[in-house]
Length: 420
Ligand code: UGA
Image (cartoon, rainbow, N blue to C red; front, top):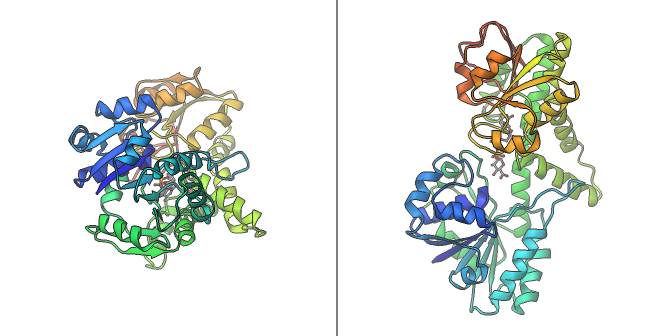
């Protein structure tokens, strides 16, 4: 079975290299020339644990990279579409890239006997049946499921752990009404030791959104409990441990802090709110999840305010939305920096992976070469990403305000946690 993967962002690149590592012949397709060059030269275009090693193994063995979508479709039996579905201004999801790629694929389907198209991009319920399949049918003048297959196979990969998550998934979800292509994909995943759930298209699309919405809700829940605990002078981490031991709650996603960021939770919760509202339902709980999350980074500033320290020399440790990635999309750290700049604070900044990206947004700040330099130059230090190296800095007597719960021992002398 020959595979093509269209869109080599975080999801597509992981999908492509991991399938190649399993031994499949894979063609990766992207329109970004720089990205293509970088992958061909075995240089990961993103920071992702383990990616470099796999690239070294599979590039020029059984993974080829191209910008030629036509050739990729003609030379493969099954295509995974992994293009982005970013947020539009009002929170709805943009289908622009997905529709564009579907149109092109539709044209090439004309030239083939049978082909299977798998959607991995995150899309709201109804998109496969109402957008993708009609476009493919129109452009190819062929009929689903007789002449080509379509499946919805949502991804549940965490950035930073994407390769580990690919090889060890909790479950695989495949939505379709098409038995032939369903069998093909089940065969492709047959060596995975996890439940494979077959659903309708809409159910699969919704499972993805509901998963992200639930995890985001868990985080806002523990942050709300954390904000209450802080007023009682209670350590939320102990409370999280206590509730997480209940198997119905489970210990994961109960880390309180400055809230969730990234390219998925904020975008997906917004998209589901938008769609639900359009359908006449007011999703109050999900709106509250975003409300709590929006205010969470401000808790750091409240601590500064209470101590009368807002205008001091402030050190910022960490810029990415979490550790283990160079991704700064929707990072709570960036919102915190914006707020501090409005207060005209003097900022000293360090992140091990994302400085260049942030320099493009805020070119005139003081970027330093290490976490220790930031500590040495500042009067107060804010920890905004849980990079392990921040645990081992010498903070001396400096006030450390921790938004990410970095320390489990060796807590600095002058320390305050956001919810603990
Ligand atoms: C998330 C989901 O975990 C993946 O399953 C999903 O595939 C992915 O979105 C997606 O839709 O593509 P990701 O955004 O990479 O993955 O990151 P997470 O590890 O889930 O963290 C998201 C945010 O929540 C981060 O800002 C993190 O710091 C924060 N978080 C996470 C907390 O504040 N507390 C926690 O207990 C856990």
